[in-house]
Image 1 (cartoon, protein in one colour):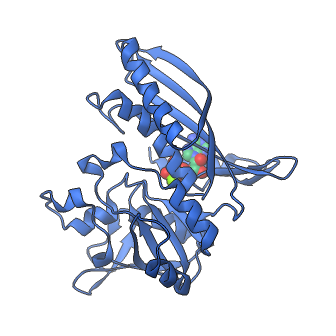
Image 2: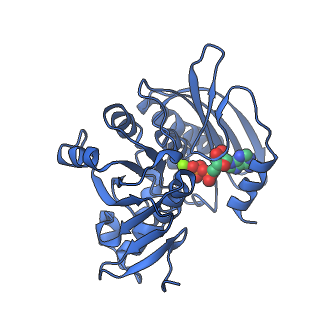
Length: 304
Ligand code: ADP
Ligand code: MG
């Protein structure tokens, strides 16, 4: 089963609903209350054997289950407020293991001023699964969607890319405060977090904004742990396609991007990696200057 095809099918079945401003298709849904306040809601599930393994320390497992959701809230420029947590523990896991998982969630929640307000605990014979839902309020500058990119925008990323296989996916810092600062002080047109790889997640922005882009392979910021390790492929291919970076990808007008890059408002690195174009094609410029088609998995080795 292909995940995106299934989501597309669900999307087609869903009827328009009351008080929904953004439904399926962004990093979080946005609803408004009767008084007009808007909330963003994100849910993500992590599974043993997929997002962590049996050897992962339980605190890091708990931490990650909340962190991936905070990353989706950051991708809306939301202020996370509350979380509910559903856990299915394996029957063999002892009480100490369970508490450490939960402590990992509580510690990160404290760090981000998020209140754990409920959840659900189950025990079964299968591996550990944790699903977290986070509710966020709207900052004065408003939520930022995937669909607002405009031709001429610069494409920027926070931090560095390609470090997930070296373990960064377990202890990354969700870019919540960076997103809030960016959205408050700069005309950010579109925003997403990089969970499936830059190539794939930029693709969501391009499709939903009905624009194209040009990305420079040589500009991609490479994670230090990736630089230090041996890889068969060029490092920039990992930076382009590996998942679970949990960095922000944003677009904003070129002039604003220049001001931002010359005078960054925080210490997290920001790097320009490309430009949004009117024509809906997505192109990758290789380090040798040749041009290739950019697709969701990375790049096409020949241009057809
Ligand atoms: P992300 O990688 O940012 O978490 P996903 O690719 O998981 O985003 O999801 C894309 C969109 O599809 C989101 O709006 C999400 O809420 C929605 N979605 C995913 N799975 C389902 C489902 N089974 N039913 C309804 N909506 C779904
Ligand atoms: Mg996301």
